[in-house]
Structure formats: structure tokens, C-alpha cells
Length: 102
Image (cartoon, rainbow, N blue to C red):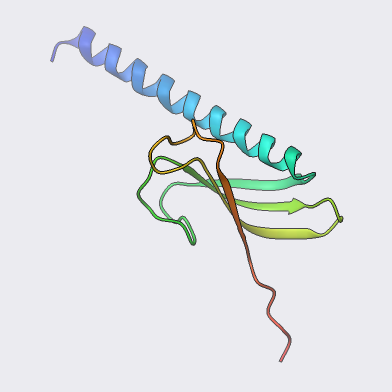
């Protein structure tokens, strides 16, 4: 591989990474707005994806939100689906269970 080809591949990979990151954050914002929630914190997870598969073309976030009822919730949000990735409108949330005091 010559230098020009290597540079082109590096630019393409970098552009894909930046666009994927922005698209995933935008999709998370849309999901929150539709549910009347405010995102208090977010962290995209690439390897440790909580209850979701490691494989697949979707984005997984660890989030803390304030929902429409003004409750704070912490959990996992998966955006997209296995085949279409972030081009899909699918979003699934799994909230941490509160543990009863013993």
C-alpha cells in the first residue's frame, strides 16, 4: 500500500468514526425528546454493553435521565438494530432495578 492510499483510508476511517459518533448522539437525543426525558449523562459503550449483545450494528449508551414524571433513572439504551444499525428507528431501554433495603 502506498502512502496516498494509506492516507485516504485513514481519512475515510476517521470520517466514519466522527459521523457514527455524531449520528448515535443525535439518535439518543431524539429518543429522549420523544419520551419527554432530559439526558443528565451519557456514555457510549463499545465493549461493556450491559444487557445487550456485543455484536451488532447498533449503539449502546449508559444513561442517566430525568423522565417526564421528574424521576431520575439509570440504565442502558440500545439504538438501532442488528442489520440496519443506526439507520433503524428502533430504541430499547433497560433500566437498573432498584434494590430493596434489607
